[in-house]
Image (cartoon, rainbow over all chains, first blue to last red; front, side, top):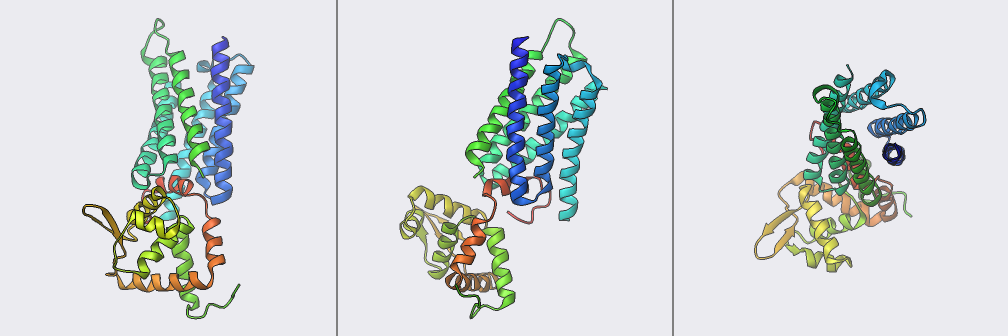
Length: 87
Length: 86
Length: 136
């Protein structure tokens, strides 16, 4: 139980920090891809925090899947958008 | 359904990892090395989750391994962002 | 600071700025490139380049490798690796001439462009997600 909280907390904090770095990269480059990563990692941080605080064993709740799915699609879309603009 | 999401997540992370690995080979920028390793690790974690949920039975629980792989991946990413992004 | 470039017309000025934004990672990178351009086709080792620019050997080698990887300079792998500016491409030569003239007259502005770019790591990260390889 403790190790679960610790590892989720670790990953949540790391994701938040990564999100902040990507946010900074976005302000420097105005490249939407970085904003997409920032949002995705921030969402990870929020999701993991909620699963720990609510005591959810995260492999069983559908909203987590939906949220994760949105994250992945968001990143995919950002990558595709980047290449559509370049060509 | 859940398994499909994790599979998609694995695919996205794998794609990012491969693109960054290629970018590292071209540019030798170390930020790409670390972030590539991170995304490949996240892909591995997604794959493990997929197996844990859909293939393996109750007697094998990869939970802790998955968490560890994810944590190490994020640690590598943080290292790269802090030391090699300037 | 001069605001009227003398021998560089406005079209050239835009091309120079574009080149700086696209290809130049730092001021020492630009100075190394110009060093080789001005002395073309004389070959230089990384150590010699570093000495000219008052940077460490390691930095000189890294800069020379970067410029070579971008196709801005050529290299000979003999007993020691040497680098030189290859004068074959006429339009590139004209561009280098404009860059040289612009840098001499507008050093602060050009340095400003270089310093306001996001770091090479960040740019390389963004470029990695491009499928078409027209840059880098």
